[in-house]
Length: 128
Length: 243
Length: 100
Image (tube, rainbow over all chains, first blue to last red; front, top):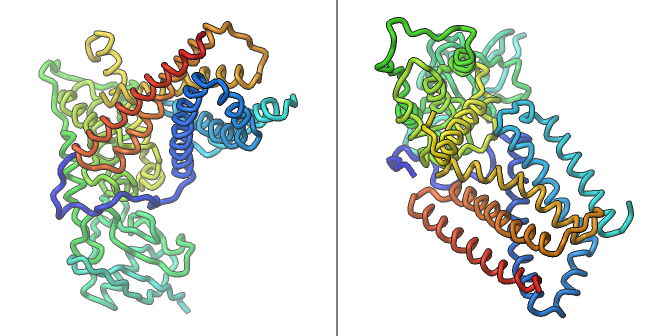
């Protein structure tokens, strides 16, 4: 990091609360939180599946847990949000300016919610 | 009877302590925050320190924080502020010299780091032109009219976290020069934009674009810089000469 | 290097939309897709590598936001590379058990 002379440093800590709260900052925070949560889940998932592969008796209860509606809902909601907002961010990064406004965000969020609902209904409740 | 508005101003002597003082300012029809500060200075407290110059929204000198938002004092009408009490504080992320006067050194340090002046290319023909309808001209025009008021720098959360971060204004300026086909110095500018103080720390929050008093869009400029750097990296990977 | 990491984060994200879609679709029987066991194993292995990259790179961005010294940032980078690589190797070994 560029060495800044002590007298010019205005803060010694990182700001956790935004100076100007905007919808975009909350969307970004949610992207980060779901990302961290999903990464933690992936780590757990890799470890437990690897163990279940060598000890087949552990596989069945693990799958039952993963297929539980409550678990599925939390996972799918987090994944759906992260995916939908992620696609929007990629579009912004590619230069599509229209994806930067609030309406675009809510359209993607709605699509995510719909996909999540469909996945949960089909996967956990075997409806659809 | 003229309406009276309570204006609270952050006072400090630069040594670290800060106090807020309250003043009653008679609010005229089209009075701005700067008018309020001038009233306070003239009739209430001759010791109040603040900056201004053109009073017309062109020079960028009078930038302050009004009710938590960075604004040009001369262009912010008191009538446009919905809260009953107007709170005026120095710009965020700048060291305070006194009261509302801040030290712009960090801002111009970042500004200078991107080689902000035009460097003509040595291979220029006699009359090097950029046609007004060209894509290049339209891109530069979109980001050119910065008055270095520092409001975007004050608004940026990343500046708050990383004092060495170049910030929206410096990077927008860099883009204007990078896009200029008549210029040189692109490698040096791209190097600093690619560094730890550069564009990769920007998280596209967009607060800078929201608050720019000239309607500029530094978020968009920084996204363009990222795409330029990404294209170069990918070309280099494939073995092509950097464009 | 930062530029490539930025590009790969977006690229891996887009790839993951499909890989995770297939993974969930098959394992939760969400859509009538049937893959040969070898193909599914291949998809899951690809998913393992790419999701670990995407996750670790995401954590790297967050770490660099909150750590300001170049030494601290480099240390975080090494921790993440080691963790990601370690998990990938362990996960590959774990997946191999399902190949029989």
